[in-house]
Image 1 (spheres, rainbow, N blue to C red):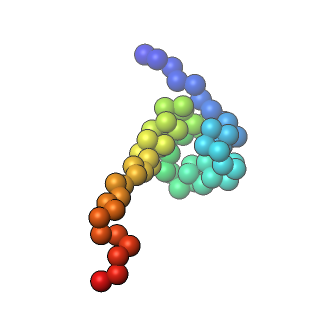
Image 2: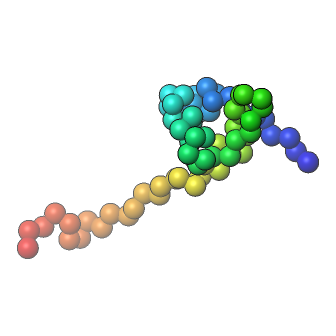
Length: 71
């Protein structure tokens, strides 16, 4: 069994490029897996990676042959 590193809310915020309020809200709304260690919240690295990959938005292909023309 591989033990994954547990990250603090601040570390998660730094990885996501957000403030600490965003990961705290994810935890409060139960939108990300977390672990309670006493009164502290820790988020596994794999959970952050899974959250990012689940919310990845792929670009759409733009067709130039008909866009921007008046009818």
